[in-house]
Image (cartoon, rainbow, N blue to C red; front, side, top):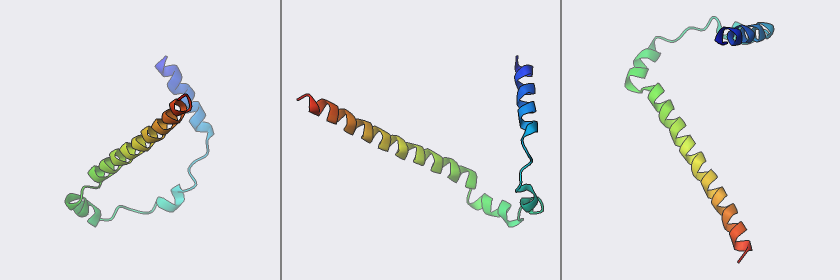
Length: 78
């Protein structure tokens, strides 16, 4: 079943065109100083923390909006 799924996905992706941005970024190489800078400021850890923080802020706003809706519904019946 997994082989069939991978074959179907491969067929679908083979229909799609290549990335038009590959020619722009193909000849760019990673700067040498980026590895040293990443040692002092770990970008991967910062990105993980930023994603977690954004998710928590989004969850807070979602909870706050749901709470307001529930309060309006139950306030209507009083």
